[in-house]
Image 1 (cartoon, rainbow, N blue to C red):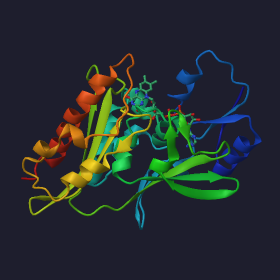
Image 2: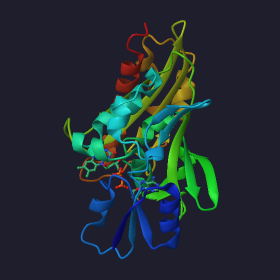
Image 3: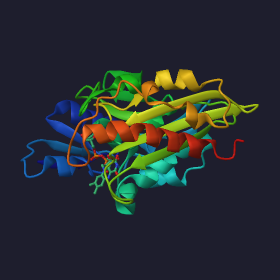
Image 4: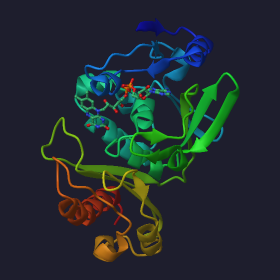
Length: 278
Ligand SMILES: Cc1cc2nc3c(=O)[nH]c(=O)nc-3n(C[C@H](O)[C@H](O)[C@H](O)COP(=O)(O)OP(=O)(O)OC[C@H]3O[C@@H](n4cnc5c(N)ncnc54)[C@H](O)[C@@H]3O)c2cc1C
């Protein structure tokens, strides 16, 4: 195995295209997944590429560089719609993992339990992919295709995440259900972005992770809740509106538990997001 610390994106793309090679950012998913297996290729470390790091305002919304760490996101000055993403960042592993692990690593690893995915789905995020052939942008919901499966080609690097502007008054929240409070992989997690106008729900977006191979938006529930009074909204969240989940049984929880817990976690996340909105 050889290891390259890329100093330009072009160098990283060239090394990747030459293959066999693998991109690495924080390495917090890559190394545990590799285990004792031998890797006979080039590890292309993109964590030092300054252009890939940081959160910036653009003319159409926000750009989060691929190599932005969870700690960078926690510390970024962002509007309340991003509160769910910030709360998720605080729940990724430990402080050490948050200091090293990156947002794009979380997406490209494509775990059903990736905490970054539900909040980004509620923010209508898209991902920017770059190769020697050029750059393309694709909605996050289309990028993620299954367990450990994405639309990324072998010679592409995820370079940025783009999030369109949201109307003023949008507020985000994130609730993670785990077997303990700290340093835990999600049993399920829910992200919400809600906006209230004159006491009624003007817009609401709800996404759930670890309850299907890929985290998903709950569009039936969203449609049912839009326009309802914000006060007492959780009473309108019924099990029959939370459909389309295909939870599995694993060491963390049974499928039945996940299904039953989902409605409760959704209610909790929406209640917290609405706090302050009478
Ligand atoms: C102890 C521990 C606790 C953890 N807890 C959590 C948790 O609570 N929640 C959670 O969601 N995750 C958790 N994780 C997983 C991991 O920390 C996160 O998913 C993190 O965001 C991964 O980022 P990374 O930069 O370390 O990814 P890496 O390990 O560097 O890469 C992950 C994968 O993505 C690819 N990749 C990385 N960046 C790019 C890019 N820009 N373009 C193309 N491909 C890329 C790599 O080739 C690799 O396949 C935990 C991990 C550990 C070790």
